Length: 119
Image (cartoon, rainbow, N blue to C red; front, side, top):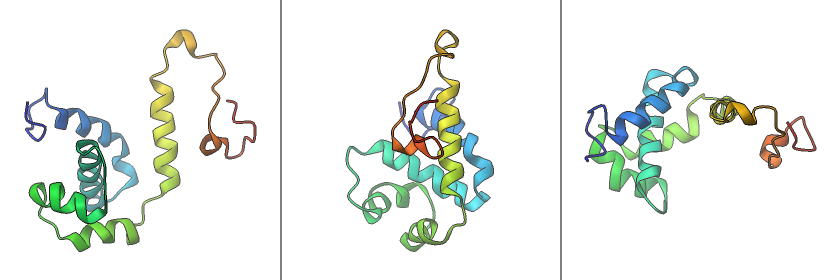
């Protein structure tokens, strides 16, 4: 299976559906960059640098420069807080119904506003 094929059964298609849940956090251009960065991170076992993912992945699938990737991380006006909230929401949605009333113990990342880390 080719990860980049746009056929419905590809990993690309699955990641695209998942990333589309973040679409409203980004502009059209920054969403496209976010999408390819997510795919490149998933594709490699170890990420050495932004240049590494650009040279070995993004430049082969997207018409952009290395500077545009740096710009995405430095100047794009997306909210990291909104990305974290959306991710937690998506994770909570996959909890089976029979476990819905159980307490969730989170790390300090989830403890913002809740010092005990219990939800």
